[in-house]
Length: 78
Image 1: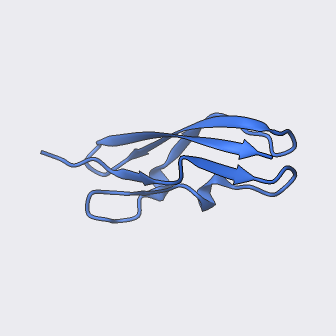
Image 2: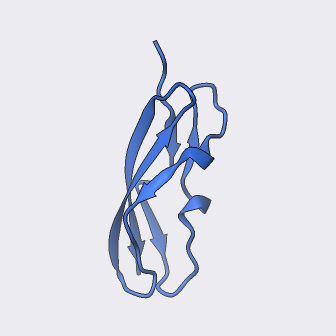
């Protein structure tokens, strides 16, 4: 039986309006052995750091064993 990968991030990522923001700095993925598989991470959803608001992103990581993990994270632009 395979084990699922893990997506590591906070429930919410806080960004100051107008700041540069790259989700790859805050969302990481590892397989069941702890190997970094962040390059397999796919993130769906849009955010706009020029507009205050809460933006929801869907993060999906797939390990070499083809098992996937899904995690949602909010990007809060203040």
